[in-house]
Length: 258
Image 1 (cartoon, helix red, strand yellow):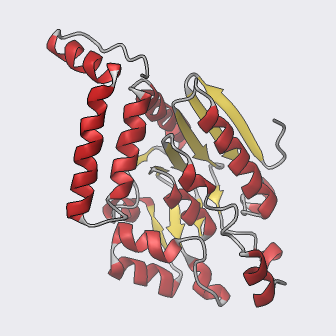
Image 2 (cartoon, rainbow, N blue to C red):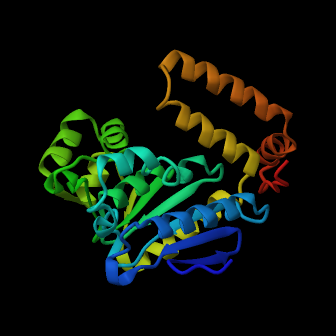
């Protein structure tokens, strides 16, 4: 497909989606979000793709939702159209792993979209925050909820009530970021992680992603039961048999993704 606000590339078995509104620091307007959803769904449906990387520019992953688009809306407008609900959550419905490769600003909606991904790899210049309070509103795409689950109540209150930014080092200490890498190597490293994941058994990767996500949605006891049943289900896969046989034979596994 042809897109106006994103760039889409394929690197082996890894799909790369790059937000591309440089003059607006990749502010998340409705057309961009709709294009993002289309691109993610297309990669999710493509059998040759095993992992997806979502990124922006070196200056900004996304500096937030598009305030110019929102500022004239009324309560009746946002409530009537159920603003955000319809298209922003597409990221969370993708079954394949989605890696957010974040350089520069990931603020407001940008931070929220990054948190919807399965892991965040941050360049050394990355800055995260939920500054909605300084605009007279609050996070609306999961910022107060996902951030609290990831970094805890104290840190989430600090960020959401003051609107301050935290750098990559603080974000990693707080559990928001999986890895910090040199900014100039961010895309290469994120694509490398994606390639590692894509080379594994894709049905098992999907099962594992679902199991980890379940930990955020249920109690420990219920989560462990879900994990146990999911673990048992992998014994129906040829890839599970191949993986264990390869380990026993001290050779590299040759996964066929079934």
